[in-house]
Structures are given as structure tokens and as C-alpha cells.
Length: 381
Image 1 (cartoon, rainbow, N blue to C red):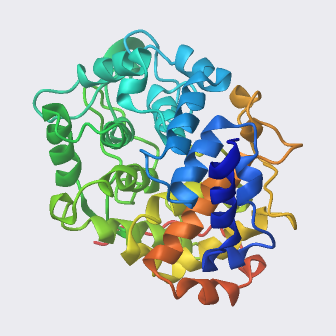
Image 2: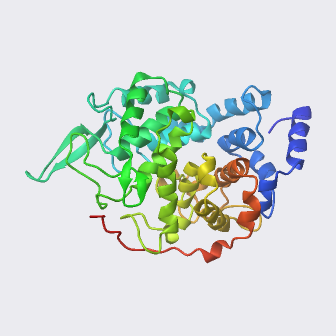
Image 3: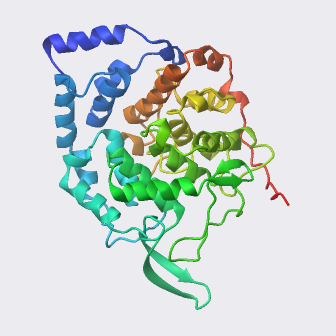
């Protein structure tokens, strides 16, 4: 990866094994740095070794990231927010998902004119009265039984878009400020505690298929993925409570289940690149908040997630999206360095939030936490 004195410096860092690595059979960091994935190398340097952005090694890794053909392929094939229709909020070609993945790799707002252009298109479509972001959507009129193309929106669009814009450093943009107000104002009591409900969309009467008084776990996840970048004073009053409600969906899985959000095999199987409700995405979203890391549910989910590693501390994806077949995380026969790094970052964050968490997790048997479909929880009268 690098040469001479700088390489030996990194090797010295790797020889110092932090306590969170005791969760794994082997230390995979050196292998990650020797992978052929520029984004894995770059984020390993920053997220696992804590090297500053101005470090020459990091700067060189970032240059290679921008030159990577796989990275450029995704940038070149970004969906056009003005023309392409939303096909699904878990879809690989849903622009907010693509942008989230790029920033997670290390792409910044100023790194790509194409990325900037698509972000500017997103910002230009915002409901003036509510501040909710709009998406190019096919809307079905049940009364007339017709479909029309409109700029409409569900909270599935808004919460994720707002967090993605925060991740690209646009907190101070007036549009984002208005969007944050909208997101914070819609936190409410649900059957599972504080959270966001799936409510009728903007410019559409459509509402998701879930029970109207249930929490929508994905709306909580999408919000948590952005709010951690803000100071605590700028976060909504009940934000941590929404995270606890999300984690309680796991704890209460034997007796209830928000519609469409179960905790069986699919939930417990890592499915990169983590666009939808999954153990990896829940842990990633909640691991940025010490109050959530210290919960019993978080510790149990960590124990279950560790089952995805083999004896060589590798993860071979068992569930993939074929759209990413050219990437390690889009194949079922080889280990994916990116997925390994994705999970290692979570373990490191958890240890930094609560140094006592490691022995707690080591006492847990991930196999003992079975999934359950649960049943509906009736609305309170």
C-alpha cells in the first residue's frame, strides 16, 4: 500500500491490539490494508487506525479512492434525480442510497461534480410549506385508478435524504435546516415508544402498508444516521428515545413485530451494502450514540453479528444485491473486506462508548438469540 518508513509506522500501530479486537479470532486490519479495495483501505486508515485526514498516507489513499474504477463506475451511474423514478427505498438505483454509500467510502461533496450536481437537484425539490424533500414518483390515484408522475414524498425519502445531506457536510444549508425542523417535529409516540410513524405522503395520499400507530424502524435508522453529526444541543429532545424504541423492536420480537420488519434469518444475515432493515444497519445507526450502545439489545445484536465471521475473521456475504456483482460485497463465494470493515467500525465505536462492553458481549452466545415473527401490537384505546 505504502512504502518505506510510513509502512513500518503502520505496522507498529497494528501490533498494538485494542481490546475490542478480542471479539474476533484474528486481527484482520493488516489484511484490510492489503486488500484491493481503495475505499476499504482509506476507511481503515481513518476509522480503525485513527490517522488524521492531513496524514500523507491518508491523502495518498484518498487520491487512489478517487481514481478507483469501481468508485468511478458508481459515480458515473448515479441515478438522475430529475428523470429517474423511485423504484423502491431499498433499491440500489435509489439515488440517496447511492450517495450514502459513496460518502461512507470517503467521497466528499467537493470530490465530484457529478455528486454535487445530483445533490443540488435533490435540494431543489423541497415542499415549501413543510420542508419535506420530494422525489420523482409514480403516484397511484385509487379513486380514478390512474397513475401519474409527480414530485411527491414519503418520510422514507425525507429522513434518509436529510441524513445524507448532513453526511456531505451541508448542515448549514437553509434547505437542510428546514428539513431538520420537519424531521424533528414528526417525532411522536407510537405503539413501541417515541419514533416516527409512516404517515401519508406529500402530494400523494399513499401511506406505507404498516399499522398506522406502529413505529417505522427504517425512519428511525435513517434519522440516526445523520443526527449523530450534530451537537447534542441541536438534536431533538426525544432522539435517544427513538433509538431505544428501535432496539426494543429486537427485544420484543417474540410478542410483537412492526409490519414488514421481522427479526428472523433475513434480518440476522448481513446484507450489504446495507440499504434496508438489517442487523448491520441497525448496529451501524445506533453505534454512534453511547446511550444506545449501553443497552442490552445492542449487546445482544453485536453477539449475533459476530456469527457472520469465520475462523479467519472474514465475512463471506450470504445475501447480496446483484447490482453490485463487481464488488466484493456483491459476491457469495469470496470474503468481503468492505463488509468486514463495516462491522469492525461498529465494534470499535461500541468499545469507545463503553469500555466495559467487551466482556459483556463475550458472555453472550449469539446462537441463543433466535428470531421471531411476533404478532401485532394493538393500538391503545
